[in-house]
Length: 525
Image 1 (cartoon, rainbow, N blue to C red):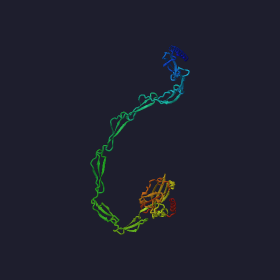
Image 2: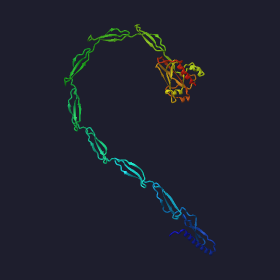
Image 3: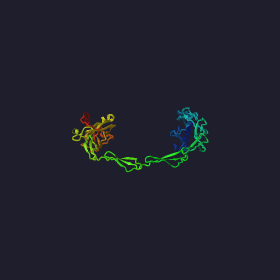
Image 4: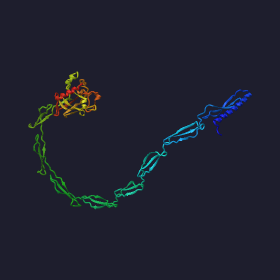
């Protein structure tokens, strides 16, 4: 049955209401009731997306009924139809579709976007690969034909065939087998066939051995007659007879004896018989020995008096007295001492005496002397003549190789070596060299100070060991002295030494040394 349209429903509602009113009027006329008493309602038709809900009421007096719409249409009660596509989606572009409500197609319509499908790629092989060449393929979209990428297909593996012998093995050389690809004929694998080895025959003597010469035996390979092997047969050796004396020995001359080989009498062997040697008597002194000359003793052979021999008698040697100093040694010159033999006063000898040694002296780097500077630099005085060496960090750093040398002075009078200061990358290293091995350093001491006053009246190296620094070990200047550019080297070691011609005399008042002293004093704080 076809559904009533909206206007038909309204007309039906009005007819039913009129009939109900007429019934109620009749009932009220009989019972003299002036109005209906409507009871509870009953849902006749639920609300839709376009119509309100319809309820039915019944009069409790007369039983008459009425219907009426209540509430509002329910927008959640659409009766949607199927989706209709207005634009198909492609790989790269979105599509569109819509649907309408069957209750009110002209008013209720829903649209939505269809997502782009995306590409559906597949590989298309343009060239199949083989074992000798690569292939080629492209990735293409099934929907739109878009080519995404292309690539080379690697060559396929060879297809090896059966093994074939390509080189026969010999006695000494390996053979070879190979397999070729059944598609392209390329040799794809090889393996070695082991050498067969020799098949030797029996040994045959080809040269007989003798007393002194080896013989030989030879054998031949049955596979290849050019393959031969030879081995030696040991020489037989001599079959010697007994020894026979052919020359008797004497005191001084050897004798000989001979023997002959029983296999070959041309083979002879001779050996010496040792000389019997002399039988010497006890000997006789023929020349007596003196202080400085050897004597002679002569021996005679008891077997043959014509045979004699002599031997030397050692000189008796001198018996020297305690000697007498004829020249006293000094620090710079050697002395002399003369000894006389008690056996023969004509025999004398002269001995050189070493120069006088200077023990426990000082080694100082050249610079101002403490005695000269005491009244100027600090409020106390000193009678020490030790030297100290003011220097500039900047001047040494900018010098060639960052190095400056100062003279090393012994006892304030002799230049005996050099002291080297090197400054690189903010680190100072001290080293020193001596001109002679006649100097023995007994106490090695140096230190670096901000100023000479920091010694606080202590100058002897023995009591300054708490300030000692180590030669040839770098000293970080900033760590010890901050940014102070003008520092003082106090090199004051102890030594024992004797004079050497390599030493130079120090002229402290020379123009050169006085100029250097002025420059050093100008650096003092």
